[in-house]
Length: 377
Image (cartoon, rainbow, N blue to C red; front, side, top):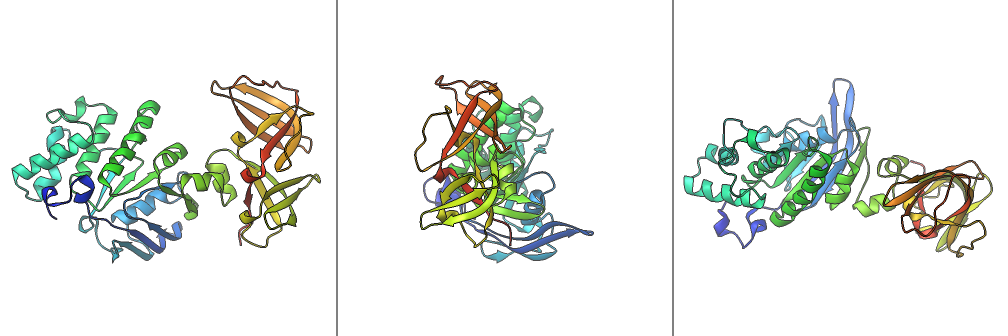
């Protein structure tokens, strides 16, 4: 691969672009299906996350892309080339794990230089590329430090530099922030996004942490039971969850069951089990199903006084506050509707109205904030 000096100006020019394509990929261990017919495309230069609980198949999917596992069925293409059965060392891919696996007997400089020296690069090029990577991860001046003398966040940066210095087409990150404390993890989320934006290569990030995936990802895939439940931008997946699992796993949702009562050109109505009606955008209906669930996120709801009117394009449910919790930046309320449904409400702490347990309230939200979950075919 050509030297950085021969590439266009900027770090991004020194990395080749590549797509990732998974075509009907299945992975079976003994009699257990870990990954179940996954189809996925990751765009060039994208920060993409696989998000899901432990055991959902996300790390196995990463391992197959990296060449540490072979798919039982299906194919994996990197840059248009089928690499399904190529070993890891023959793929232009590097991986950063949760355990950074730094060499304790080597300095920071030599840890980052290790792969370059194995390739037989000249000392001048090794020095140039290592210094460039250490500057990128904000570790200039740490060249002579030993891994044991570094903080967890600094060790993570060294591992990242060591992976990037080889100029892979794709960087895989398997829960790399899991060993860090909360404050440092949040800091590193922003650092990883900055670094990925500067160099412009494709990052595939595996995590069970919803906040990590939301903060860093251009797009994400939510996985469960070896399958992909939904793919989209963080905003799309959060605001329009396609399944009950996605609605529950990515944040908190209030779900209400009912039957389609009226389908209009712009607005449709769901009749609840207690006879009440909720409106939503007709464009959210994808099939002809009539038994539906609709949902609303807690922060989309406002609390009205018992006699306070609401606009015609707002949904309203009456109930009683059961629990009121002060959380600093907001108040969190559990409200029991007259039909017995428990709803969660997050209200920003503006000091406008405080509710107490036992208060009668009306919960209101705009119809556009109502999402629809249709039964799976």
